[in-house]
Image 1 (tube, rainbow, N blue to C red):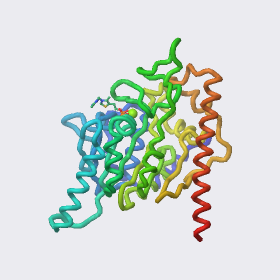
Image 2: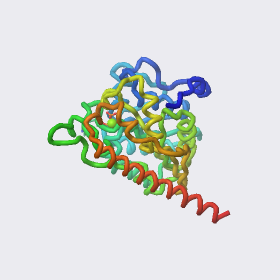
Image 3: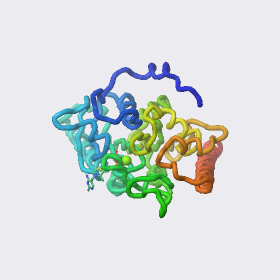
Image 4: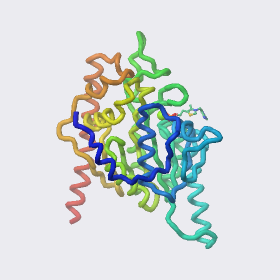
Length: 316
Ligand SMILES: Cc1ncc(C[n+]2csc(CCOP(=O)(O)OP(=O)(O)O)c2C)c(N)n1
Ligand SMILES: [Mg+2]
């Protein structure tokens, strides 16, 4: 496995807006991602956060790990609240009651909040064209309430509501493709990011914040507790997710697809599944069918990238 360059991390800003002392599990990939997101967003940021792991661990009353204005909202409505804050500030600035300045209005949700219960609120906020960023922290289940499956749980994963056993092989449905759903809203910017690729992530989050109008960022967020894996694997598992084609890194800018990290030959998905207890029960046949679908989805994405490239070349 390629070695992670620890020195490279020193090139990112030292300042943190999510303080230490929060209560995330040891080896939580999601909190690492959230910290990086805030390094990229900077000081002038207001966050509306859905109920979920990242809310629970950062704001147990009367404490807070936040150094930016941050509001805890319901499980489903962070996109609506963030869009309301944006609309309010815009009106105040227009009326001259607040100095004109760039503020990042941000909505946060887990995969359950985003792909399931909050999907229509998010769709509305994206469609109305608010100048905001929505960030989905995807740990592939309802983790803080006890590892229940969501529509973003991958096929075959064992969770407490899709348990593997004699009668079942775990999650029975294919993962919902949230970045594609938001890209279909024709918003100006959609990106997938992975904290195991911090510079790629940093640049995309900055781009999302600088984009006028709605932007969507989908964050790969490993979870040692729910995925039943060793906590020290957080960064390695993230690299494997991208190296196997399970979590490709790409962006869609005004409809134009671009890979931001190209893999030559994809690694076998088996390498990704093996270290995770949630996939321990999978048979060779099941792994083969997962492998086939991953390759198919990856090819479809490459095709979109190629078509974008051809359109661009044609325009020049
Ligand atoms: C309407 C409503 N239903 C259920 C809950 C209980 N609940 C809170 S968070 C959560 C799961 C969150 O899952 P996800 O969005 O994936 O975030 P994670 O905990 O995995 O970070 C549930 C079921 C709630 N707060 N409100
Ligand atoms: Mg989740």
